Structures are given as C-alpha cells and as structure tokens.
Image (tube, rainbow, N blue to C red):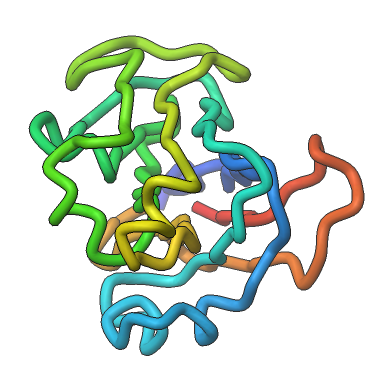
Length: 163
C-alpha cells in the first residue's frame, strides 16, 4: 500500500582456506561411510602434510572434544559452523598424539594454531590420518556449499559457503 518493501537480507559468502596443510581429497574418498556419503554434511578432506590445525577464519571454538582432542567445531562471525575431524577412528587414541592449544568457548583469529597431532603415531596405531572438513547439515543460514577440486595457493578457499 505505501510502497514499503521487506528488507532483503544481504547474502554472505564465507570462504574457508584449508585449516590443515596438505593435499585435498574428495570427501567421497574418505574411508568412513558417514563422511564419504556426506551424511554429516558437505565438505572436503585433506591428507595432512603437517600435524597442525590452523584457524581458517576469525571466530570461536564452539566445541573441542576435550578428552580425545581429535575434532573441533568452529563458528565464523556469520554464524556458519565447520567441523574439523582429524583422522578416522582417532577418538580411540583418547588424546594420545594430540595437543590442543584452545578450548571450547575460546575466541580465535585466522592463522592461530588450534591443534597439533602426531601423524606418525596415528598411522602406527593403524588409523588413517585423512582429515575431513565439514559444513554440518542443519544450519539455517547455509544456502550453498562449494568445494575446491584442488589447491595450489594455501590462502585459496577450499570451501565456499553462501548464506
């Protein structure tokens, strides 16, 4: 009647560089059905070259698996969350070979060291060290998730999320 229009939300694009130095691997190649079938969400996997998890953006630690330290959930300022899961079945190591440099609730800055893990120890224990980086299902603001096929520049986005 008065020509007022409902204010359109401005689309937000969140670009996530690799939080783990290494080689990108399609999620379908992960030797765990829950990740490979994308039951938990869309994403990418990384074959680590180094045993480090680096904050890919400014945000906060929503959840760190305190006892096992094998998985961490991060939240971007936009509200988008990602899960970084180091290795397959590494929860069985009960934290052995893992060092957390943050805890649940911590504010993080891009480039900050979050976790360290011993690749050799994980492999010697018989576990794959491949590390999925997932945009968990069920996030209201997530409209689309795109993953990179390869990465030559460490600053390049491996996951792009449109909200």
